[in-house]
Length: 142
Image (cartoon, rainbow, N blue to C red; front, top):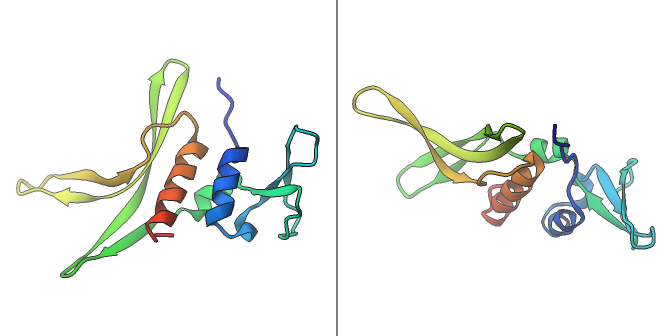
């Protein structure tokens, strides 16, 4: 069974530190460990020193994702709801995807889901959450 990544990588943390408030992080990377950064829980302090970088756990990123958001058009508004998926890729590998979309009703009374945006398939849920957080922030949905 594969290991589940439970916090953002150093590269992901650097990107999120540019777009999220540091106080939203629940962990931090300690960079003062001679080329071998280590992750520590944020113990209630939110001021990161020169040798620390905010880091986000999977649980925190999932909690940052809104359950839905609304797009307002000129004549109407559309609400998009979150949809988290897990697929079997191979016998030993699952992939994850996070999407926002909605149901469309058809003339025959049936309905189908349509993604407005999705992350593509990722082997780690945190990678999908990271990608969606970045998209939501860049598009003023977060």
